[in-house]
View 1 (cartoon, one colour):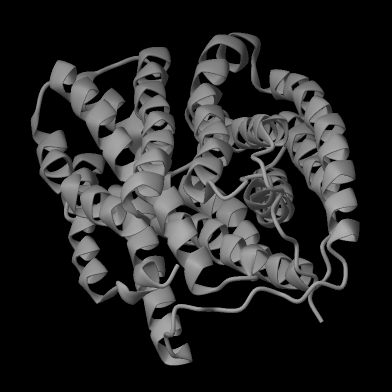
View 2: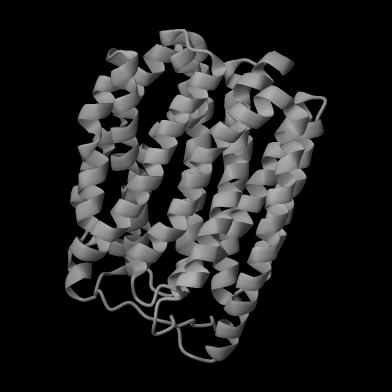
Length: 396
């Protein structure tokens, strides 16, 4: 019998801030990998497909493990798994800093993926438990830490790793160690809440949808997540190369442009959660997935200044969907917070990894500018949102 963890009556803001901060640290480490690609490409003479394979190794490792970890922790919460996951990330960082071969880089990327797989399901559960019923806001606050961390990664790479060299990546293990300490304290809070809720029955669905309807809705949400993350993967893995080729930028200015996009996604995540709590997640999903289409279509065809502007606009709009998608899925599958987090955070990583690998092959064959012209149409998949049920909102 699974444990049912009921949320505290009031929002536990200190816990939410702590888990958001740790999400920031976790995703700084993840984004360092993508920010290192130009340096690694020069040092190891990597092609685009090899860069895509590194992203694939990192993200698919997380993708395969996260749903399994989420399913297990739904049945038996594991509060102290949070610092263990950060420990795996530390090992991956140290290997990336010292590896002498491409195989070593792949293993380092996989260790960071394992750390992510352990972190996301349980930390997403902590965010919901600490929400006090403000599920969209709590999920956004948790997620914005990750997006802000992803945005900081390229800047840290530009101003620390590029001047000091690849071994300086090891310095970030200190930041991850701080994250382990914070997560240990979060685990204590989480464990006390789990013990207080022991023996209570798990939440059951009240939306009246059949099992097949729930499965179909989850599939649609997963496809929407794919459209968002495949496009985001084209930015995070190859945007710097696009800017260098199209506008003849140096590495540091290109990474600063990547920061603009990633910082905008952090703002979009927070905005999406707030709007979702006010108007419902379905409104945010429609506005985000389809609303970004005109701007993605323009991006490959404008000058440098407008490219910077569009990067911000696209980042804000496309990122706003993810908290809404997670909250909607949690409403469809009450009591399965870990599994939902595993599916969607894991699916996000996995689909992004597959997309990055495929886009790398396409970039080698057709050119990086062609890739961005093709990816501009990905938001059309958002039309599938028409199949999402509305009944869930009338019964919740």
